[in-house]
Length: 276
DNA sequence: CTCTATGTTTAATT
DNA sequence: GAATTAAACATAGA
Image (cartoon, rainbow, N blue to C red; front, side, top):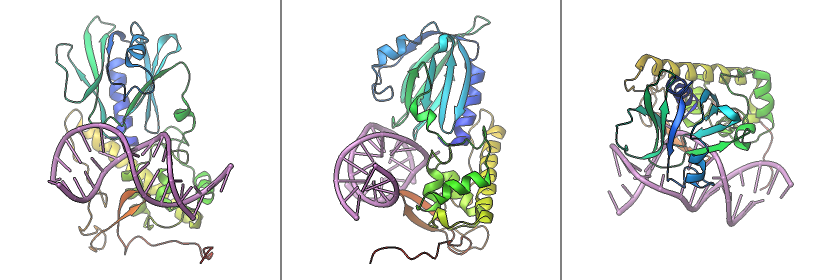
């Protein structure tokens, strides 16, 4: 589930479920998700706290409790938060359970599910390093071409890898990077430091378009499931929607990467590589 | 059985 | 030391 649009959608739902409520019970025995601290210790620190707000930077969620306590949640690859009744038994892949008492006296139960357990849940009294090191968030801070171009210029990696670097931009994952580069008509293998101002501008517009599209898909779906329709992600071998050419699939930085070799032009600097 | 997966961290290598 | 690359993590689904 987890890129900026999914996490933002999750933030809204968590806030709706939790704001103003108090935690009556907190349970988890999952040492992996709660790493590096002991589950019982973490859970004990939550009982009795009231939830004030839920915020997000990049792919991190920050649930703000009273007494200056923060719960940081990262969804990893397969994490999700759901709301159930307190009677609902433990769900498949349920790792954390928070039972709540709302302002109106009603009880509710919010669960964190995560099959692969790449996600994390941390409790702290200040912002954690992973949160502080994040680059600008496209929604909270906006995207600025000049700043992004400067960050691009400092890296020699492929533009897709640079886009997914969370210290460059917070929240861009494999889907958003793949889709944005298709909209921008730039080959994902292009070195980020080879892009012109105009090309970085195209990447920024591509990111905005991809983010808006995914947020809209989620909003429209409400509580129902939805199917994301992508331009290129997950469409290896299928026809490019722009020129019908079969889409290419490569591995870049260890991640599957789909693109159109005809529409997406490679932008490389002319500087000769060092070495043989 | 094999391959792939919306992410990040860590060890190894250049 | 900085940068890059591969492997690891854990599980489900095609």
